[in-house]
Length: 295
Length: 252
Image (cartoon, rainbow over all chains, first blue to last red; front, side, top):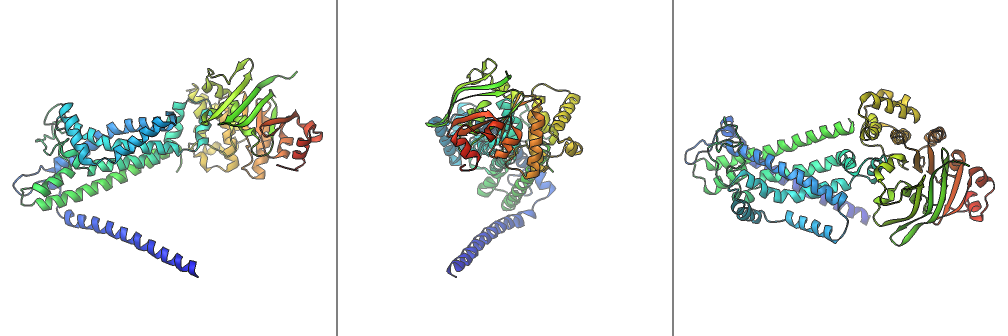
């Protein structure tokens, strides 16, 4: 009887906690969407922001966020995969690798404002990349790399030993075994990690204030030459992302509709993250099916 | 005088300080089935896994002694392990097909070893599946996932996969112990068929299976070989008391 009562209480408590979390989530999402959705229009999504007048948009910022995502992932994914494969399959288990693992963990829990200031000192000034998308991407790589390394390592470690041995026993080299048997098997895990890493790119503001900058030059969306200073594709131009824009508009926006713009931009940010997650998962499943021939 | 496929000379395996296999010397005859029997933890699987250097993957495992194919000592650190393993196939206790299609499971090895022609690969896939007595059941769904096959079919697929790279020797680590009796019978038939072309070394818990499929049997106990003889002799007239006790089911 007593054990039964305890069980009932525990179940009720867990249900209440779960309900609370869902309520908070739904409440927050609902609040942001209800406040912001009304402000979203084609004009809002495509036009440039206004400093003083009403009716500015977030076109360049939205583009910058997406472009920064691509740039960051282009740097992060190969490095993260490479390091993760090394840690999982090549590194000998000893004090040095344990130390590397510890450093990686510490790196991932760095306060983002510290990474931003480090980026300002080293990437922006010392290396001379200036306030640019590229500097921003490097700063974000500092965050994302540990996550990517750890996820890749965990993904590979989760591959059953028999799968790896089966390939090696056929006289297949270690490298081919990793790329053709282990990575496809670990793909769902690695993909989840990549999505998490990508989500941070959208959401990060503090690390970008001093690296990618808080301004966006007048962009000419008809100029697709990456070397031109007004081209949206130029990675060496300053670029304010959506998250930075929200922060700036909220804290020092002069436009009379600043709070509507912030609300609309927040809604856009959330919807973009959501769409990105769904798309990445769908793509991942497709690739996984193609590799494994499962339905 | 029988042709020898593989010999172990004073082979010992240590996990850390603990000896798992102690100074074993055995000759394995070509185109025959040799069974390794013995109670759990007697070192027979460890011994088997040393023969294709699979124990290299286990951290802390130390293997000393020689493993000879002809005059070549494959336990030599200088041996090209990758090409060695092409010559010695392996089948595990639990079926472990790749998470790929049936066709890809088999074509993966030969393609890596340089066969690019689609026609040639198709032939190898068909031939390997036929040899593994799996062709009729799978020919209509070669490009479906191997994981949709039953356990017994998966195990035969794993056998087909290993013969696709044309090894001389196949190591089997309790290949039927995770299967039902019907699938087990099929695997045993298959082993009898395969020994025409391959030398097979099989670890088994099941003494009836050893008696049915093998020509020679080695009885392992505590990391040592107690007795090694023709299977017929071993089961009818064991020389050692421990062998007799084990075979008659008094322990193990």
